[in-house]
Image (cartoon, rainbow, N blue to C red; front, side):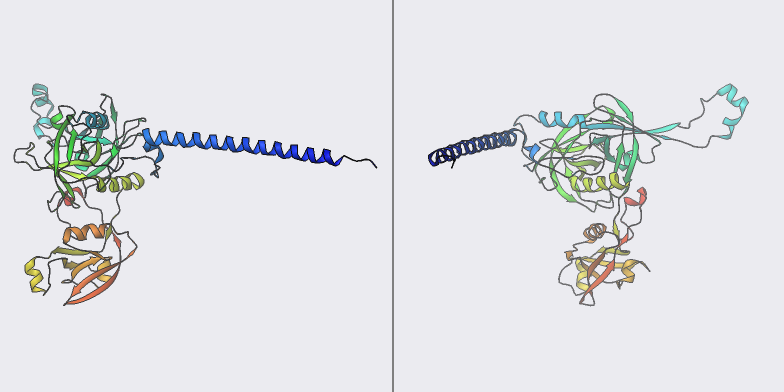
Length: 415
């Protein structure tokens, strides 16, 4: 009987086990080395390029550069704002608009004999009106943010980039109630501004205002944040302004208000002045409102807000006392639009509106913002006080009617 010796089999098995052990050690060593290299690469990226490790969802058609959450009031250099200015200046543009004028001429100017002797020298009509403002590049593919009043009624819009190049722009959409507008130019690879965190700004923080005041060219001014949440100014329908003493002058409208690191915290919009120049009280639209409005305009071309069809007024201490209320919190419903959502839901004139979906109403301005944030078609709960009784009313939210620009600077007739 032929076969393999037992001693030989055992030797071959031991040899196979030894080879398997060596192979497993090689595989494990290769895995350990690969893991060590990968961890080393991640460490280097985290140390020198941490922004590469943060992913953000992209809005259709454009990308917003978001700043990391850092203290905005600390200047990158103890002696100079030059790094922040260098970062921002390429992203701020000049906005030139022209509007054709169609004023009727004097009848004598139509007489050919009169025009033969005098020509057009006696025709005082301006052929076109021009306006100058500022804007901020918010995406590399050419979306630009500015004020609505800068481009209002414009027949032609030109954008002058920081490098001197001039390009025509088209209006994507505007929102007169916040005085914001979005323009688009045909360009790519543009320097885009970085957006600050919405809650990063505090009173006393350093800020820079960048724009084109008086048409002299790009200018950078510095100041601090004087106040936050300024409202009841009669400038816009929806007001939540940043107040700053950084010099903001005519032509700065639509320009950037940035923190000491060069991140956008607001869009310069208005000044309080007796002379037309800066007197240390300027107002900027905060980045929280800017981003919300801008994204809606880029996505849909307009801004959609909630509406329930009521007229309100602030609840003064005297009115609160007459209604036997302990505090003046809330808003008095002065009128209800017949057939509107509030009327259908059982709201009556004279009710005191205390909360919207559980969020307290402090005054008419806060109520306006709470209702505007609602989505048309959704059901909302209004907490009202009627004859010292608390009621919870269900309302189907409607869509806020579009407001004309001249109406947006006044208190709205209905929320």
